Length: 307
Ligand code: NAP
Image 1: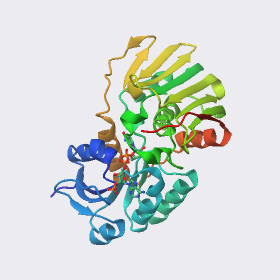
Image 2: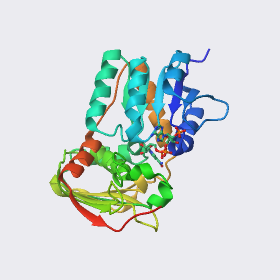
Image 3: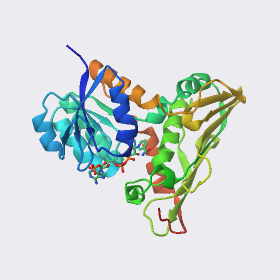
């Protein structure tokens, strides 16, 4: 008999289809037992249109993995936790910090695992970057995260609605790497946020942190994607490129190649471990920086944006 964990995938859209379904299918640890989505489905898998029906009909499903945009996610997560299921959250883990704290308390009260995933932390160069930086004095760090919102979020208006986070939707991936690899904590000191005049979230942002750390996020890049983090120390310079998948030290490639293919399998492997060990993992550090930028940032208005 298989001891694979039975999972329901909720919100069958872009990331569920691109990454979650193949990662689950490729793992002997997991079995995709149901989906919950108002419109989407996965061929050959029991499809439910609402969460309460799935939870009532499928008591054998131990884990619920939520791939919805952040704003609708809380209600689904709370329902799953109330029903005693382990919960895995796409990034960012919620629309607000307070709602994630509520989910943490619910998971603890129910004795189930809650995992706030950060897929970019599973990129190929991140663990080695963290190990190399450990104990080294950092003198400067800079993030450049530039991509096309038209390419990566075609027609997804939710990213420009309140709670959609705008350019922080990809930018928080960079912050998830930064907060994982830096050997010291940093805090935001100032920010400039560029809001299209017809939108409720920023399309670009510049951030300045303590410790001579800075970031530039821009969704108006129509050339190649640039997902780079450069970190200077008194003992040399490290660069993570391709979203954390390629590591360079003093300009010399350490051999990793571009490509996101290992990130989601690693998230599911970690979730299996958390469930089996009866643990939770919720690190809100990346989201705290975004919330601080929204609190402290100077808002400028830029030209309207249409997909
Ligand atoms: P998406 O395709 O726009 O949405 C996923 C699905 O969620 C939709 O297909 C929809 O399915 C359901 N949904 C949307 N709005 C809803 C609402 N108000 N109430 C209930 N269900 C709703 O989004 P995505 O690109 O997959 O992103 C989802 C999450 O994954 C985000 O937090 C994002 O940051 C993260 N993520 C995305 C990417 C990427 O490349 N897109 C990469 C990494 C992580 P139904 O209509 O069938 O209900």
